[in-house]
Length: 238
Image (cartoon, rainbow, N blue to C red):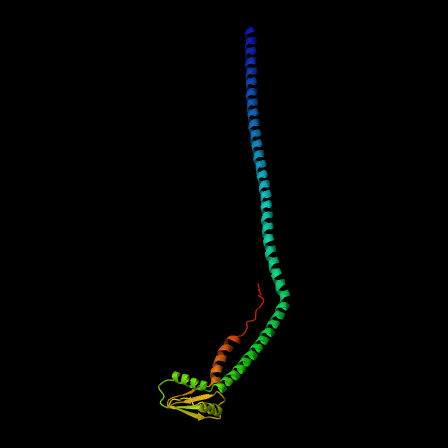
């Protein structure tokens, strides 16, 4: 009886001990699993929050950069558009002024050309009168022109026929000028006062004062009667 009771108590104590040990093991495993699960949840939550925060900051920075780029691009386009519009407006507003300026410039140029022609004609007429008066007082000047013209002609002339206006021939005859023997003076009614025509065996030449004056006036007209350029207002079609 004592032995059975003793064995029963021993078995009961062993059973309690085993049960207690099993519960402890089970609790430890449960606590360990709970800690690991909580750690994983915290980690996942941190990653999620970090991802959301990074995404939010990226979106915000993108908005700010996009706003700056948009403002810069808009300002540039607005500046170019405004500049082109301003130029176009200026050209349209300046067109009537430019047309008026062109008309006035052409009118002024035409008037200047007319005045220059009048001046050239007046100078030529005055010069002709002065030359004729000079030849009337000093008819030997005609002989000087003859000699100068002969020196410019090719070859050596043995005989020279000098055609003169009858009045000039009469004055030269009165002054008893010493003429070369190869010269022959002939009156020609078709020549004006101061006119002189030379004829040799090989060539003919005009030694008239009027022809020399005409050549001189041609040079004057070439410089004086050049077309005056008409200034224009610059226009841009952009």
